[in-house]
Image 1 (cartoon, helix red, strand yellow):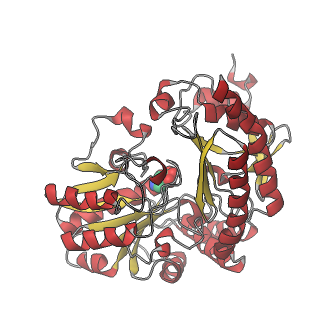
Image 2 (cartoon, helix red, strand yellow):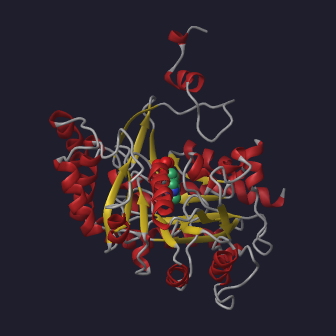
Image 3 (tube, helix red, strand yellow):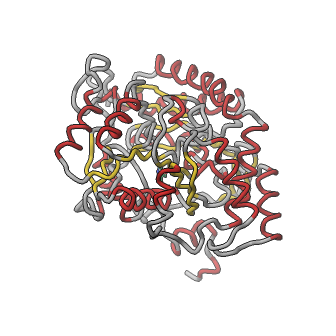
Length: 446
Ligand SMILES: Cc1ncc(COP(=O)(O)O)c(C=O)c1O
């Protein structure tokens, strides 16, 4: 068929790659407009965005302050190389000192969460002179060779043997609902973190531990309150850096500016992206302590990109931070998140296919199971990459028919709407989930 006769959806599917999927049968929805918490397809149908796309459009769509900042920067100085100073680079860096955990004082600007983590790994290796990185199972840190090596979900498997960068090793995830080492909190004495010390002691040469403070895509896994302070102690004792990957958890998502603020634990390196510009421009940030920054006064900083500190990516970050403050969205994530949590817990009481509902701030997971007692999931990681239709995708597809978009991953949903969502909009999203879950409930008995 002539390309000129194809629709935007058909051209997108035939000429471009769909990410993390089989290309066959990809029929991407043609989106033409968006406003507030809704996006709109070519037929004019509106969809409530119940997951802020990839948990990133924190301010919803068409925030005027952020779009204006991009427009103005494009007119003023659309690009200058990373070797120069700019007003936006100076201003954003000053503002970051105010909102980041105190003690993170030196910044490297990249263009994605992936790149922010790559920078973190290189900095950790250069600073410590050591090579190994401890990451955890059920984590995601990005798509390039280093960050995918530190990832432990099916997105890494095509790149096996794992550890394309030498020396990435995995610690158990914190998953109290499905403890990988079959313990029960609090009697476990947080054995999962104690095991990290065992790993460090038995591996020489560990440069850093990287973790998502609250694991995102792999299920909104919240550590017990003792976990992070104990991990900080272990890292300090062994001279290992702690890297907090706040790509998804940053910018109010968990009800604090950054998830590490919940435990008052300062990481040596914090990486973030997504909500930093409410996703309107691709910006990643790798923030380090002053001690790390000072180290490079006399050591060659062997890292960089053409687009480092790109002015068009920095201007919207300043505007987004101002909007988070003006609209009091960080605090609001707690109150509106509590409302969302109550509604989701009510669904659990009603649907036998829900195994657990868990969340913090405006960051929630609804996990489906075949059996609430055995906790057997409907699908596994292996199903995800084998092309086996997933039950969560069926439920999400039904919700789309009813005008609600939700992120489904293997056996759970991540409910993480824009921070500006209203109670009425939450009601709409929960209602769509409620009705679509009849598909999962029906699958229990079949
Ligand atoms: C925790 C975490 N780290 C890193 C990344 C990679 O970020 P990006 O997709 O911007 O490269 C993601 C993306 O979802 C993420 O959730």
